[in-house]
Amino acid sequence: MFSHFSLHRLLIKSLREQGLRQPTPVQIEAIPLILDGMDLQVTAETGSGKTVAYLAPALHQLLTTAHPSGGTRLLVVLPTRELAQQVFKTCQQLTRHTRLSAGLIYGGEAIDPQYALLADEPAIVIATTGRLLEHIETNSIDLATLEILVLDEADRMLDMGFSDDVLKIVEVSSPKRQTLLFSATMNNAWLGAMANKVLREPEVLEVSGGRTSHSAITEQVMLADNEAHKQKQLLWLLSFEPYRKAIVFTNSRVNAERLGSLLQQKKYRVVALHGDVLPERRKRVMERLDAAEAKILVATDVAARGLDIDGVDLVINFDMPRRGDDYVHRIGRTGRGGEKGVAITLVQPDEWNLKASVERYLKHTFEPRLIEVLQGQFKGPKKLRASGKTVGNKKKKEKGNRDSKTRKKAKQRKRLKQSIGKRRAPGKAPRNESST
Ligand code: AMP
Image (cartoon, rainbow, N blue to C red; front, top):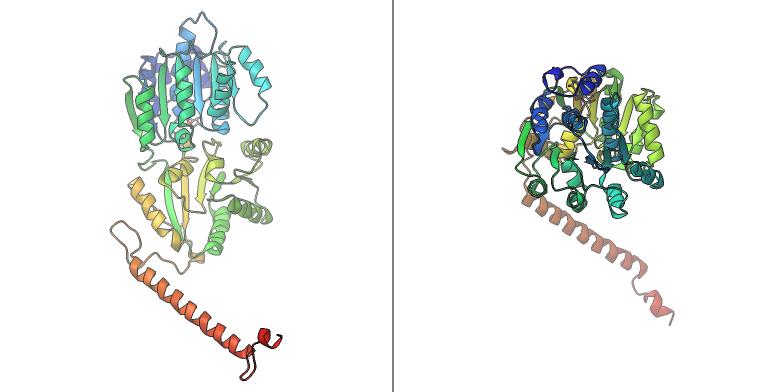
């Protein structure tokens, strides 16, 4: 029970109102350490309840300690706008009975209203890296008396190239601060270096690493012959698989657009998100999903990073994700807050090795899934290496390629000779010669 932690009663009240009574494992482990003032490095699955794990104790500190000077007291830094919005929402829910004020700062929106917001010196600031740096550079935010700094989805921030930005933010933050670093995975060399630089004698928690099997999610794989076969499987799943909301992941914007249009034609309530979708439209897409006006989201990895959409119980990887981390983030859109979810990955022959790599990375294999009425030719490679990858004789293949190239060139030469021969009928001089 949350009431077992010595959290401020107004926080317990808000938690209760949101129906949160039983803390999740990451909350059980992290909350007491944060209340003790420890620096933390936490690896926790997406959807594990990590936002409440850091916000509840951090807000408790703010409510129970005096802060005579102005300036930001709690700063949460995140990689994307959507994540910042979600954390802001959770923060507003938690602080609703308190006098604590929070400000949300992210790029892609006019900066002037943010100057006004920061001039009011909210105790809590939730921000994305780039825009926060702009505010630091224009001195519109004061982090000199910062008490708690949270770097959330730190692996994503580093992946997205924000390493220097994060360090600049840390540099201007009070050296007396408590720092909490959260990430879905820790297998990132930069992340280790970053942790060394920004944390002081941290407690390291690996509550349930993103690489282990996610108990709330059933992970399945469905073999497909080609893209057209995958489209049939997708339509079947969206028609017959029980789900409240589904996310279909693709590896490219083009595919996201194409599938979005296909599903729209088939009268599914679908919205699409990818890197080219403008902020206003993204907002509308999120509102439609939240209001359940749309049941299906087709998205690319970048667009879907950190999204917390209520009620997603089905994730379909139309394209096999290229990296294990992306797979973990994708399937983490379901099975959130202890709910059950299903993740189905469609794999065509040229994606088999990628699937094997992701399984090796995760240290578990996916459950095979078959749609009887849509059985294809591809049943997996005939021979497999110990790694689970296809046995392919590279040299042979290369040699084969070389042979076919040589044959092609010989044919071209032959055709050229024949055509020259045709143009120069025996006894006739070449055209250019006759014209002189
Ligand atoms: P997060 O890992 O912070 O992205 O949280 C994922 C989801 O878990 C959110 O929708 C939260 O509302 C939900 N959640 C957080 N804490 C709990 C809890 N103790 N019990 C049930 N759901 C929770």
